[in-house]
Figure 1 (tube, rainbow, N blue to C red):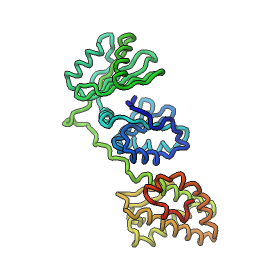
Figure 2: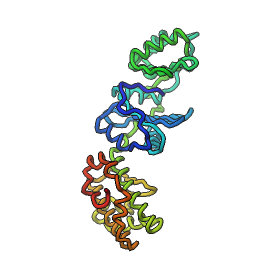
Figure 3: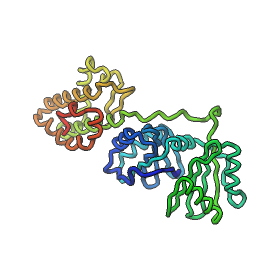
Figure 4: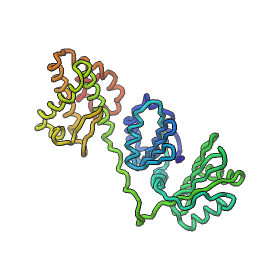
Length: 336
């Protein structure tokens, strides 16, 4: 799906050198309305943001399409891969909301051709029918494609894209009408189901604002785990961490392994429910105890130094997260 845009905030950021979680946090703090797009060969994903909150998501891989929370989670995971590109583009909030709604639009008319249907007369009919949805216009050959968004029959946004140009707004609609008149084209009309019709999915819950924080702590845990494996073999860190969390359960019950709220596994942290205000302070203290425990078990007085070397540059890489959640004191013992 081609998406409308007003301007580019970031263009062609390489996923190999960009922290997706921090990029998303930046847009949340900016209260951006628009799209965060992820592109790999044969793959496109997009998060739809209004005032910094993710309201929907779209994945397209070949002829397959996924929307909603499943797509949002997959995009966040895939964005950690290499050799992809990220783009951040602004658009009016009401336009983003409409595009997010039409992701679930259902075909009303398919494969109408300009040989039998006038594009202008089609727009007139859809206006009379007060249709909310969109018209997809496909020009022959490599002429390009266009999308005209309709709300209660009125065209509220148009997008045109070809190999040589990309247009939005009135210019896009005027261009596509001109091209269809000269070259012909095929039209598909999609209608959003009414509120009382079955089949509408529940609104997408925003991506948790705490995801950048959990991502940061997961990277810290992963770094400590790497050092423990290098010096003592696999499995040392998870066991030591679990023992510390159990011993601290009375003080920090939300980290108690038996409470099943917090879990570190496969270099990822999962926390069920909202994060307590003292989450970072608690986890930082427990990781400090874990490092001390491993240094004693492995008889390595240099264990903490090795952790600091492993995590060198982490504070710079995640400076925005550390500043936003005031983490400097919680990580100063082991994060360089």
